[in-house]
Length: 444
Image (cartoon, rainbow, N blue to C red; front, side, top):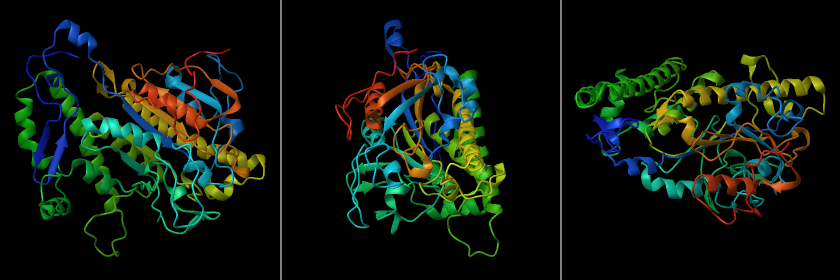
């Protein structure tokens, strides 16, 4: 990063009619500093959580060796370009054994169990929301909670447990589960809609007329470019290209909707192909981090008990029924295809983060990501030896490139305490946690 004398406020926005685009970090946003101040300046840290449902084909996931020489298993193979940044952690357990699927998602970030029934909804605050409370003083949005499926939160979904336990992993407090938004149009408008404007009709007309949100900020973009250096101009162009690409894909998804359906004020904007939908959601997350709109994002690749089908990778049977494979090797192999597909999409996200400049490195350098699920052996809903890994860039405090194995059913919440400590949000306990984990020591 070039430290300049010209200074643009970090929260500067490009405003147009019904539009407010936060800017990415530019060199011009870093004021002239003394050499000592520049050395002491710390990059912004971010937290991303990606949850996978319905368990794992564990033989295709679990490395047989620990330490730095662990092998990349078939499901982890898409992470080969990031081997030095990944940290698989095995042998962790959740506390809620009597709730098959709810016992995977609800305690994943909370370390706590919930109540039966549809009305007495109770768990505890999740790790992401504790981090968001501290990080949100610097951002426009405290956090984003995203998913791939739209499910109502009423009714019973997991034995006698309410559906909300399987539909979210984020809890603001003991009685406030946060819904996961799966509609990229709504996410896009939340990120780039001008919260200071009351002219919702202007925004609706812009969408209906096919005009890009960039059209209304073109003047301010050109004015800004005249005041910054060539390097900042390149960053602005790269960012705006990303915004326009996301918007174009939303428009394409909306064009493909059934023309006979009633016209609604807000188009759904959900691509019909799972991989296109997932990549769009990942790209929106990248834009949110790039512009510092938020520093905390949770994302469910699907809800627990999901019966999505993945025909695009040749798996015809619905996910949840397939997960009850009765140890049939053919079905387990099919499960592994879904697990690997999810990992390929996650790897796409890592590639985008790694290719996006941030401070003196990339977004990936400053983002700590937790990937995994709350069920291991899906046939019996096992909540022990969970499939979990961390991805940490150079400024996150994570030492990647080795596999850590625990053997005494360590609480997963111990890892959450460790993650919060790495992010500079230390807590003594979370849910059923006992202590932070030593994940930095490379064990043979």
